[in-house]
Amino acid sequence: MTILVIAEHDQNALKRATYHTVTAAASMSSDVDLLVFNPQVSTEAAKISGIKHVLVVDEKNYAHQLAENVAPLVSELAKQYTHVLAPATTFGKNILPRAAALTDMAMISDVIKIISPDTFLRPIYAGNALATVQSHEAIQFLTVRSTGFAAATQNQSATAEIKALDILIPNTLSQFEGEEIHISARPELTAARIIVAGGRGLKSLENFKLLEKLADTLGAALGASRAAVDAGFAPNDYQVGQTGKVVAPDLYIAIGISGAIQHLAGMKDSKVIVAINNDPDAPIFQVADYGLVADLFTSLQELQLELDKR
Amino acid sequence: MKVLVAVKRVIDFKTHIRIKADQTGVETANVKMSMNPFDEIAVEEAVRLKEQGIATEIIVVSIGSNACQETLRSALAMGADRAILIQTEEKIQPLAAAKIFKALAEKEMPRLIILGKQAIDDDNNQTGQMLAGLLQWPQGTFVSKVEVLQDKVKVTREIDGGLEMLSLTMPAVITTDLRLNEPRFISLPNIVQAKRKTIDIIPLTEFKVDTKPRLQILKVTPPEKRKSGVKVNSVAELVQKLKDEAQVLS
Ligand SMILES: Cc1cc2nc3c(=O)[nH]c(=O)nc-3n(C[C@H](O)[C@H](O)[C@H](O)COP(=O)(O)OP(=O)(O)OC[C@H]3O[C@@H](n4cnc5c(N)ncnc54)[C@H](O)[C@@H]3O)c2cc1C
Image 1 (cartoon, rainbow over the protein chains, first blue to last red):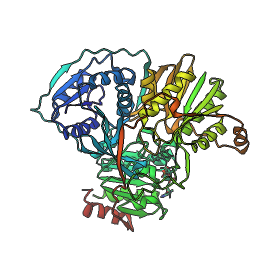
Image 2 (image 1 turned 45 degrees about the horizontal axis):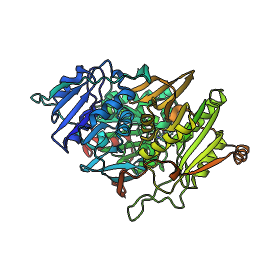
Image 3 (image 1 turned 135 degrees about the vertical axis):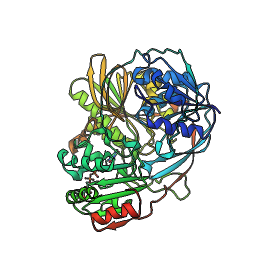
Image 4 (image 1 turned 90 degrees about the horizontal axis):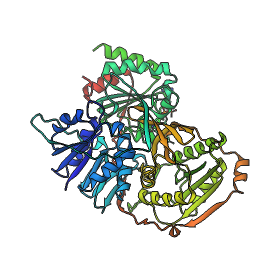
């Protein structure tokens, strides 16, 4: 078995999700190659335990990793592998299905467990059921959820061989026009140990900001329900849930969130869940380890005072 | 400009699903079904493009049993012009669906195909990307804004770090995210009017595409249940429990 992992990275560094995807690959084979789109990140990539080759392509030709030429590249490379894995992030979800179709292969999304090299576990119906899926395809295309696999580690003595590839596939179909990347000093939502998440119960953008101080005291990332994002209290990349991010921190504090199944789908694998809500019947309490039925505004103040005491 | 919109009939998003005792799947008999919410957003976007004078005809298509006519009727009531049911009792996987839509696109020649980014039953998030790849068209996935300019469509995509703006040369495939629009309420007169619109029923077998399932669902099981938690009476008690019992605060 030989496995290709498609790395997700920015100009300078690999995204955490790449490390989790490598672990999934390494659990099946010791022949794992990593495809990167920028030589800047190849040194970092070569130090990940479990990687044999780092494949680097021309960064200008594949700038912003648009699906229109990255997918044919992946499809071309795929022919030499038994498995092609990408993180189940908006990056992987954009590219991998297109690459699979170009290879005339089915794809399996959101793998949370590898049962055998052709059988995988994945959530369906917003995580209310788990499907065990077997594939007889010659090449398995999989996106991998970070929450299902630990992060691969950096090993200073590991040195995967770096290979430059000169496959230049042009893109005449789409053009990058710009981006608005939300830059924050707080930890990344999907990698944070603690998450403070707010819902519609916060009632306004100003009130949502009350969560910032709490998050900073705890060294936490901020998350939000869809309702809070739709209402403009928080940017879209804060959304946790079936159609947002899937997280599993050590501690998830849900404030003014009712706990709709679509929200639970994104956080119910957190180690410890705290819910603060003034409705004792809110479904969030069914998954909370610690529930506080109270007004969130008074609770927030008290919580801040309590934490400042330490 | 013709716009093709794909819609899927799924268990309504408010319904609690029941897993069959024999672990073969999820119970769909006697369960409330509706249009996949992301597809509703796709139909709404097409209708808005028509209201702006950009789209000239909206065709909605669904693959499935006769019951999908109900879903297509809702799309017609929202403002689509005509509907196509590609009739089959088979369970169609994303790659097969993409091949069927490709065959239909080659016949109907739309400039834009809009699909939901994922169906809330299988949560695959694959069909739009696969379709775009097979057609060799550009793709705008997880889109929260669409702007059509002559031969190009500009899209804003919701990505993990924020937003990304792309310009796609049409014909193109778009998949919708939640914040693209808010689907309209269907009024009674619209429902009545929709009854006069046509639904063409084409048996799947008329499309010469390979729809054999590539993946086999061995079983469907419930997720592990979380052990039930406790209610605390005060913030002080909460903090103390998080420190001493859960040991997640230092
Ligand atoms: C296709 C689809 C996909 C979706 N995807 C997602 C997703 O990815 N993520 C997601 O989160 N949702 C998603 N949703 C939406 C989901 O169904 C819910 O509508 C949403 O999660 C509700 O957000 P909320 O809990 O903040 O708001 P609400 O349900 O309105 O809950 C607000 C809560 O705040 C409490 N509250 C109000 N005031 C106070 C106060 N003063 N003190 C304490 N508590 C207070 C209330 O008791 C209530 O429980 C999706 C829906 C659909 C149809």
